[in-house]
Length: 194
Length: 112
View 1: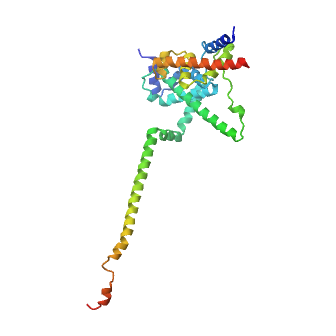
View 2 (view 1 turned 135 degrees about the horizontal axis):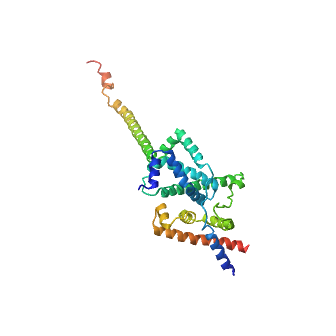
View 3 (view 1 turned 180 degrees about the horizontal axis):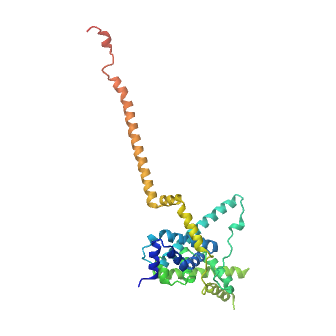
């Protein structure tokens, strides 16, 4: 029996519009949820989701089928999200330089606390604090943590997505948790001492 | 409960706060927006040209060709200059040792 994703890939490679629509319907939430977990902004995540599917449409011929379609999509999403963050950081630096020369645009450049739309209402505050701490982690730790916690991916699948070993993912997750605890401890200690 | 225990509890609560999180969903009409983007992408030939030029293989090859052309031009130019200079430098020597230059004997011995 032919796998469903294989049929989809064949359709996509033939430029079949219905194949593209099916891929989108199947994977749009996965792509968006991953993107929003990394960039922590709904509009940016929407933009990245669009970019990911445009890239899928344009470069499907280069997909060799060595990995699962979902793994390939995760890789594109992560790469686009990290690129997006880099661009944003460059813009922030430029805004800082601008502010030195007298142009004050505080409202536009100050980040707002992020609220993930899928978090339960009573946990929103705690989740906001966790997402703030998450921003301070190195990229690889942040990606592994996001894929595991937000997307519910197994360590094995994360290893495939990040093109690394299972041991490396276990180590990344361990360091991510330790660092997050450290960051949160500093945050709560500061908060309770005020 | 002491302060340390309280902070530990807060940390655990924060870390576990996204354990049962639901997947976030994009805004409606995503497909329409993507199709609009795709149409925009395929319309612009300049973007295609930019993409082609931006490819490392093409960019590096272009640079190498440019450097080669420049090097050849410089080498040829130097060789030309060198010939001109040597020609100029040998000119006075030729005049000095020229057989056609009139000498004192030619003037005195007018008779054959």
